[in-house]
Amino acid sequence: MVDVMDKALGKIRWITSIFKDYWQHALALSLFLLIIGVVYWRDLEILIDEALHSEALSHVLLMPFFVGVLLYWKRDSFKAALAFDSLRKKSERMFFDELVGLSLCLIAFLIYWYGSYTFYPLEYHMLSLPIFVAGAVLILFNLKALKAFAVPLVLLVFLVPIPSEVAYTLGGSLANLNTQVSYTLLKGLGVPVALNTTYGSPTITLAKPQEVPISFTVGVACSGIYMLTAFFMFAVFLAAIVQASPIKLYKPPPLKKP
Image (cartoon, rainbow, N blue to C red; front, side):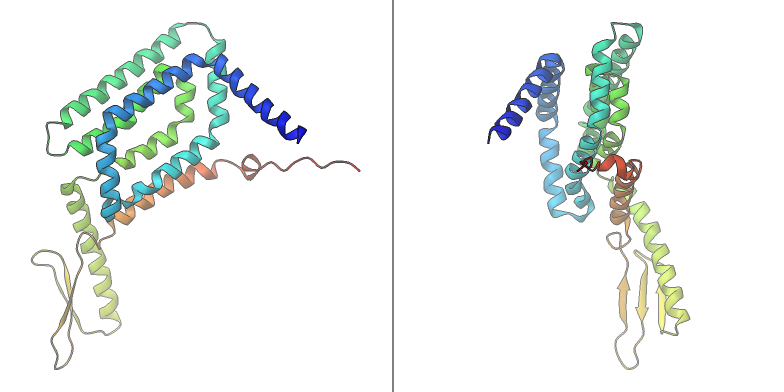
């Protein structure tokens, strides 16, 4: 019981010392999160509602898990960036980081403002989010911290919904490709099928003797465009994971000599 209390008190002292050393960063980070909550709350609410009811954005539901895991694994790099920031004095490099960060925040604001007057406000608003976060990290911390958070920032890009024109264009191309491949395979197996790509979505018609032919239409939802988006997001997450060796991910406790 005493050991447990000592460990708990040690944790509390560690948290208190961290807060004393980096209270300015903690205050600025809290203000930064408050700004994101105020500015992007409505957009995030719409995005979550769309993710729960539409397969086009269902991959967004995995985003908190992916970003949380990557932030946890990058905590040592972030601590090193904070230590480096506390040791160095004000220099031209620091002012350069802050200037670039302010420029990124201004670009994010312009994208957000411009998107509010278009037919795709949600897309533009979500596009401005990773840019704003990158600029805020440069202002509050330094370039090393931004490099540590590079992969989570890239994942935030997948919060941007695919515009309908782009989705229909890419989905139509994938649907035609999938239909052509399916038709070729079925025809090679001797199945009595016919392909129609004249109007609308490509259609494969299965001819049955003395019965009405059955048509199979491959639309945008069946083209694989949404699954491909989720696959790319998972590929970025997996690429970040494989960079860490198993030794870094898990360090077994040292063996005690008898």
